[in-house]
Image (cartoon, rainbow, N blue to C red; front, side, top):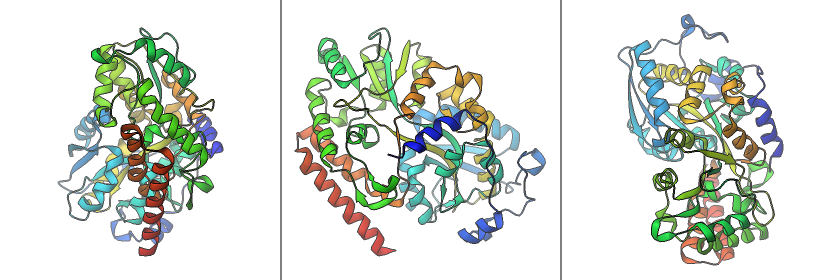
Length: 436
């Protein structure tokens, strides 16, 4: 699905390209945020210090950031505070949870000034009026980042995000435990039969089985989320024959490779086992690179094993900073969002966490291009599926996650689980449409 998108993304990562910006006055007119728009001189693409926005007097900022990506934010915030004298505070909120939390915390004045989330949540955030356009630094963001990244963090033609990284997940493998990455799940099953020792917490493979983001590959071999390249909410492909077959196979893996309930598997557990040498393979994203590298693990990264003889497509996405529309310090928040998304910032993020840059020059840097681990992720990008960004994507996660959990934990019939989930998604979509 949307293969052209993925191929363009790979190309864009390594080609420096310039994209024209839209007129700021037009953006203000379309979004109705004229009262929030900065009044400083319009910047040029060079983004020199004299063109920086003037932060509010006495400004301080709250940033929401996930646990695994905090090392970069702490480092860039320290630089930002030293340069501008603006205090930065953190609250650990997972990227996928931030928009839902902002729905209530934003209007109440409790939300972070700057948030970070994957592009599939943007439609919900914009339609709820939760984030401001990237207006002051629009030209810089458009020209510096890949066109695909810019398009992903735009909605209805308006740029909202400050792109930070592009990502998908792939297969980490400990070379001391398994020399070569398996190319099929049948090979994973065969390896696990000889390697697993549940009494000593030894497992061949782990992934966040209860999280649809990571378990989507089992749907991808014959199903899809929304049709028309993820834009048609009325065409749901989560309970096709292919999707049902994929979920049945997913359910069979509990007995053959990972005899744990979904609630007993999370990021920290997997990381501890992988670092401790009792987990041979982990399906995870580039944010995990720093942890494994710092632990001294000799690991490789490869595309996901095929499922039922078909390539396993992963979800791909763009993470970006966004300014909370209810922030007391929108100018300071704009300034931080831009500062933390420049070429230099994205290279620092790559250095500290392994996040793949959205900035075209950063992605073309030798430190990125020459990294074998990054090549593994780029190979997986070649068979990935961009997450739909329409607001109705928010109605998918809970029902489909529950369906996967029911099949994994309780052995529920795959067709019944998916039919139930799809009906819930349809009901939510129709209810959302009726309320507009």
